[in-house]
Amino acid sequence: MSWRRGLALSVRAAGVAVIVAATSGKLPHLVVTQAAISVVLTMMVAPLWLLDRAEPPGAGSGSYSSKFTVSPFLAVFLMAAGTIGVQLPPVVAVLTEGGLPTALALTALLLGAIAFWSVLVAPARVSGIAACGYVVIGGLPISMPAMFMILSPRDLYADLHAGSPPLIGAMNDQLYAGFILFAAMKITIWTVASIVFFAAAAESASPEDDDGGLLVPAGPTVPARPEVPSWVLGLATDAPTADEPLPVPVGERETAGAG
Image (cartoon, rainbow, N blue to C red; front, side, top):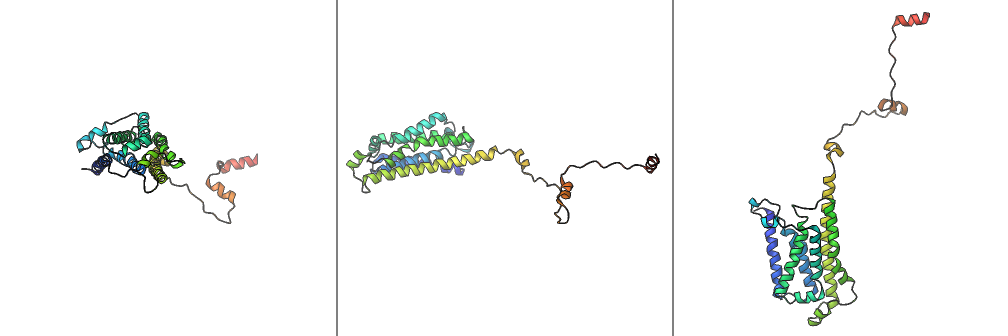
């Protein structure tokens, strides 16, 4: 078993464990809890879930995941709809209670995130600068819930907090959840975008641009001498030169002088 296969299986087990724990309803009834679950499923479990799909089927890899393909535009929509939907106040109130609705909602969130990352994880369907733009544009709607939580002057989750007042304070719960979403998602998105950008820049560099990576021998140089004028050194390097006259035989010179 390759390390990719082992890591992918471990992450898949962790993702299922997170969904089961949330379904139990025994996790703290906080917005921070739901934000952390969303980050784990979308930014950690989903991209690593597809880590082994580029391996040949004969190697024992998950061949079913290699056939998972979604249009990039649909993938961005699914990712945005999932991450925004699970942070809406009524949805958070339902998710904290656990049960079947929580399992279905988090499973849909995970599938949308897998669709988003499947566009980039090998075998990638978008590469180069287009992949960098895909990640950046796809990350914009993901950060919208976090910005609302951080900048809102009032408690957006008042109904949830009224039922179970958090010890850290209602506004702090909302603020910390916003920072978790914003920091984790932005760090992940910009890290991936930077990796894709530099990889595209390295691939776009043509071997002919740098002479195939071979050292080009420098032309002959004339050591600088203080006693030699600079215009003489210029003639010795690349200055234009004139053809020297051919030698004239002695007999022709005497005839020309006698004439």
